[in-house]
Length: 288
Length: 323
Image (tube, rainbow over all chains, first blue to last red; front, side, top):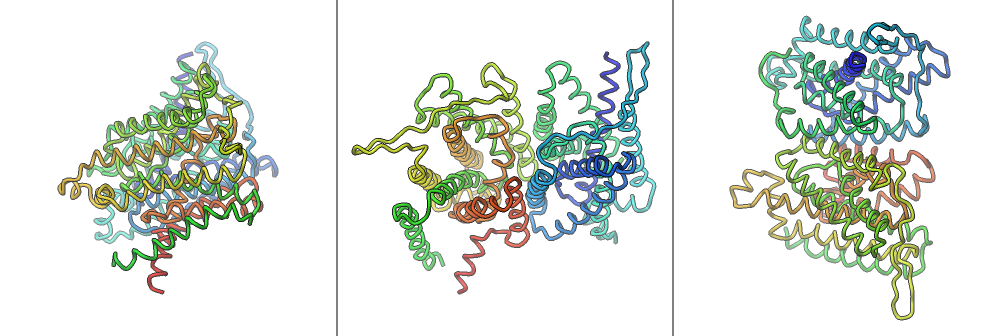
């Protein structure tokens, strides 16, 4: 049973890391708090649901469709946020909070308040000797989350573009002085973030029920992990995701399902109190 | 410049008071209009209460916590002991204030975005506690059968405060004027100067002898108390309360949207926002878009921050002055 719990926590945690990755990139490079992050993930989930239910698109092919749509949406959001005035951090927070309201209610109108779930084949592999079962969905979650994380880490660490992105994360003004087109880096951050959100959406819709009000929880998860990890630290994001997944799984086992939502909120408050400036100050060490 | 602008505001203010206190008596407008305007005052009070804290320079995304605790405070006292609504409502306000003290203790060092995020998360804590504490709060089923607001008896006339739209109108008008008076004090008094100096620069304010911690604490407590007071009235109006209803994102967002739209840095800004936006939403958008009309509030806050970052109040003022 404990092994199964660990496996489930690992799956959940890898998925949380995927959710947080887009948020972390966007925040790190543009300093924009995207409070509509969770709603955008949900939107991707609903899109995949509609494609799968009404047009019988196979689940695998809904992924690129969602990634493309969310990429466009994220780039639009970036264009919108460019016009936000100082203080940018707080104002971008309020603007995206407004966007979250718009998306929530838009989804309520389009998809109604019913709970939706993307149904996938229930194939599973099991190891009876260890009482361990891995469903196909879990395998997808782990594989896609880790693959996306790996690719982003390659992008940041092994390419020239990645160097420019990391420089922007460390110090926007210094990067600008060094000749890095900071505005273009912002667009790229939102584009990559949008792709990651679009990937997370359909996966979210197949692990948890989609509901128009569910976005804030996903946003909180992304914020928690980003603060835990520090901006733009991919390994930290993975670690944070696993830690949060484990904490939530343990809360479900010991306290019951209904207490799960409390975990991310409490962890967020504790993290903010312990490192109130940790969110905003980037250490000048290498971005790993 | 101060001298010149003193007169028109006084005139406008008097006209505003006279118009809105006499309007229901003229018989112009239906019960529906009366009810909608009444609730516009109610949400105006909520927006003013939110802005009391925002004036110190921080943005809260979690005022639903105070609202919900106020609602549950009054609903529980009513459910178990059937106390008079006057007592339950004050007690609800008190419960919200206690949570405000907790905010002060825990979030003391947070500013800006971290503060906003912490407040956003802090709504979940009481919500999930209440949702799961079946023995005390009846959990997610909510509490039903909460008594109405009392009836007023005066000179042989009896008016059901919770049922008669005109009585409700005056009740909420008085509520808004009360909070509005405190809100005005935050502009026109020594305390108000202290608050604004904190907003502009905390260190400078402290070096001038402003007690930053205490002033901030006072603003937070007043804000929490009035928000919880509004929340405590809510179950008496509806007759029921349940966690998702009172701890909703909608209730955290609405005062923020109304204040930012009306103008956060004007004494009357939140009132202006509530009186323009809420009736517009209820009378126009509600009929156009029955389910998702809250989207309008989101759109309004985005557009306001992009085009009138100081709110329409400030925009109107500069227009009037240049005219």
